[in-house]
Length: 115
Length: 284
Image 1 (spheres, chains in turn yellow, purple):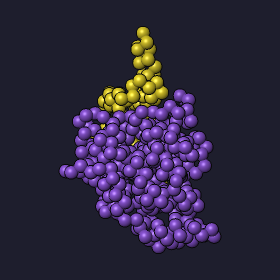
Image 2: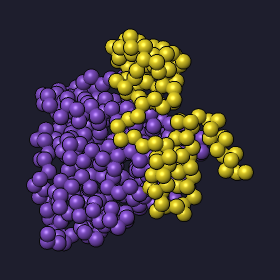
Image 3: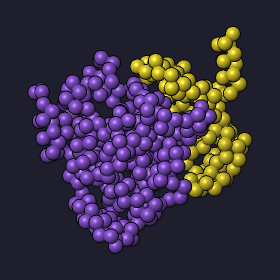
Image 4: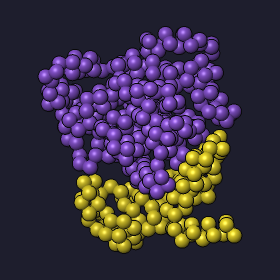
């Protein structure tokens, strides 16, 4: 799933989470397919961010998952010996993988690594 | 370029020329706060006479790093909800942040991100007035911002050397300036009479175990800085995750599950911050 500014939403995308106003008022639930009309109505109600299924929008300057993981490794290169930070790095990597590919993919990946 | 000694840098910092001057309203507010009977409404009224400042303040207090569920519409409401320390710090630093958001969006985003992470952690730790901790996060790299504004050539030299030699920025700062951004930030924050809790946190964010009375706040800012650098939001001058103080970690440590929740919460807020910074830049 991906969180996107409503300005980048397009018809055909599916909500992964409920759409809500900044005040927390829920307007429609997960699974709703967006139409141009619905996007316009949500925007009028003050909705600014939507969480949609998959990863349909490439943000300006956004890196691919593989590139992001490589950069993550590089950022941690000077603290590689620290067990707490190593755990933090792994947690961030897992979080990104689940966000983009889903939980099943991560479990499959873990199985492959351990075997 | 002539080499400046730490003494010369100190003396230049005492007489900062290129930094925007403090709004005259700050000394007026300080006088008013010294009066025990002053109310938030009266303070709010004084600030609201300055419309530009008011609109800047309201934009900041309503941005996602404070994470208030409802919109704050007036300065007196902001004073009641966030406290005088927060509002005063935002007023004092508003000009320099304005300069920075145009000149160095990476450092601006790093500051906003650290503020956001600090607020999330402070709330989880049940700390009173978490917005004050967010504000400490916002200004933790004041030293870098000041060097960038006051000694632009030296700042560029520091950044270039950091990239060329792949070393941490603090190390290069010591070589070039004879002191690091913690110390410089501290000098300026004290000169501006920023609240102690925030000043000490910025002075010790890389060695939080030395922060005596404010060790917990410093520990939160220390870890927030690490977290925001780790996820790659903004640019604090070098890309490397700073070393973790384990004494600080012992003070605030989280389980794996809690860390997962913090990451998720941070991620959500960072998307909103991305919008906030894009929005500000579009309006420039």
